[in-house]
Length: 159
Image (cartoon, rainbow, N blue to C red; front, side, top):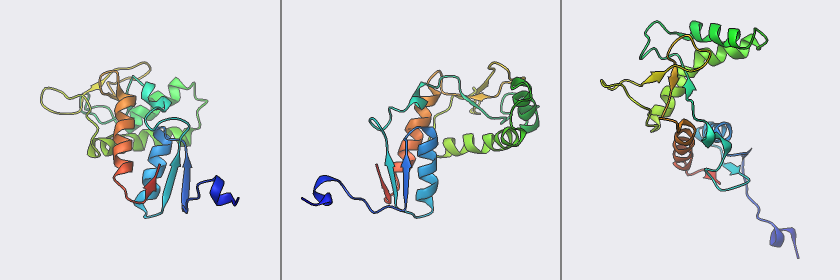
């Protein structure tokens, strides 16, 4: 009996271990570059812990509070972390979060909306402005649904 009789063999350029939010996003980025991507998960696709996230995505879009911006978000993040945070990561997070939230929307995320159709943002602990982009209390579930749909749209991905 050869090894090929006992195991599945896949020819991949990238193997992503984990199908939560971070794993799916990494796999999408690899797939966009044209690489052959494999994703392994310990359970069924869609059962990652990311689905449990309820609050929302902190992103200073300014759709509800126009005064909000990435500098305010960065300040809140550093203050909330008692200035123990790695400021470089906090800075990048604050700067890139709006782009990432809008990317999810472009890929099909159905965020809650204001009466005039803008993305609704709500207050959440530690934020000076209404900054959380959300889908009711199911934001994590919507993130995973959106990322899975995007990932499975690529032909060069195996899950």
